[in-house]
Each structure stands twice: as C-alpha cells, then as structure tokens.
Image (cartoon, rainbow, N blue to C red):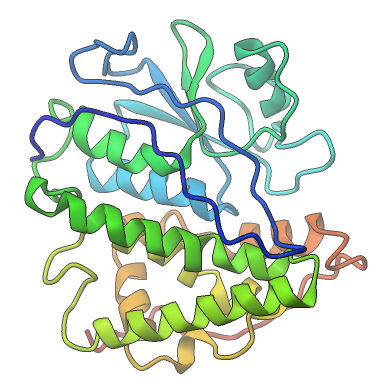
Length: 312
C-alpha cells in the first residue's frame, strides 16, 4: 500500500480569464482525515460518511475508490435524490440520510458553518463525532482515502504510488482543467469565445489521451491509478449528457479508437459499474438545468452497449 503522505489541501489553478467563462465556486471545507489523527480528524472506522449523488462525477469517483479499497464498512455512504431544486441536494423516504438525519444537505453545511452561503455540493465527508463537514474539496478525497486509511483498506490496488505521485498530480491537474471541468466550461459558458476556448481545449486533450492509450492499458501504464478514475467519471457521462446537453459535439466517446474501449473496460469492473446509474445521471442533468433545457425533457438515448466485451 501507500507510504506516508503529508496532506496539503489542493487549490486548483485559475483558468485563463476569458470573458463569459464559467467559474466554479471555491470549495471551502478542506480539512484532512489523517492516519495519525494529527489533523484533528483521525482515520477511524464508522466515524465518517460520504454524501454523494450518483449523478455527480466528482462524487462518483470518491465512491469508486471507496469500493476499490474495500472501505465500505469503514466509511458510510449516503446517496441523495438525483433531482435537486433551489434548496439543493435532498433526502426523503427513497433516499434517506442515515448519517446526519438531514432533509437537505445544506443543513450539514450550516451545521458546520452557520454563515455558509454557497451552493452545498457533493461529495462531502461528514464527521459524525463532531457533526461537521470535514471536506467538500473533491480534489483531495480520492487521495485522502488512498493514503490515510491503509489499516482498513485492501492491500491492492495502490492508486497513488509513491514513486509516481508527481506525474499523477500533473496529469490530474490537466484532466481537471481541460476535461473534468472542461465539459462544464463548455456547457455553462456565457459567451461564444468562452465556449470555443473550452471546447478546443477539451477535444485537444481528449485526442492526446486517446493517443496515449494507444500503447498502454491505463493512463499511467499497466496499473490502474487515480487519474483513471477521475477520467472515467467524465467519459462515462460523455455521450449521454455532455455531447448534447453541454454542446461537446465534435466527437462522441464511441468515436475514439482507444478511449472508448478503455472506458468500457473500466465500466465492467464492479466498483465502476455499481456506482454508475444512467437514470440518475440523465434525470439530474436534463431536469435541473432549466437555462439549458427549459422543457426538462429527458432524452431516451443514446443506445450504447456498455456490457459488450472490451478489446482491451
């Protein structure tokens, strides 16, 4: 497993200032759960709970790592209703909150900071002892789980190998700027210039990644690592949502000779498949962005054979 890791909360760099560009709200809760407890949040079984929505790519990637590392009995999981209104992510009889007992995720944020006035987001890590959100900084969470819960986790896979961390960090930053957040910068662009800048960067990066995967099984070589999980959660939503809804329509995922079989091969691994819910994904995106889809009609397609054997 991983060796000692000194956590530093990640703050993403600013994208180039293009008029009308989508700017993501900052993630204010950036505490770390640590193996030694020096942060004030010791890694303990049953203490922490992960709030997610199956619609959200940022949340899914943390849920995938939780399953890959066998941390299901260590870290609880609470799934929100995929339909979010102006009150935010909600819980009900179908989607109960077994951790904080909240009706809305915003209540967890206000319990942490009564002055919190941004949009409550998933994923969020909840400390049931102190009854507060430890982190909503999704940039950190997969690394946190991969490096601070060794005594609870399965011995493999090592998703953040010590000898590859600099290279992984560099790739993760490129993935965030151009792909993970890039699709949002296309979809929520407020000007043609901003849209085209994000669009060009997105597809230039996807083309580069497709070429990279032409000679290797995973992004870092022959072993699954953290960047694969971060890329997967965007790619699995690409044809169903981003291609149409966010106007990312130069090419579909299924048009890429390497990215498509790569994504399909990952999907067939249980932690990836069991955390992918296309019904939640499509209903959330098409029903909660009235500025993009005022009719809130959810498309029935596309028809994609995710379970077909992959060539990889």
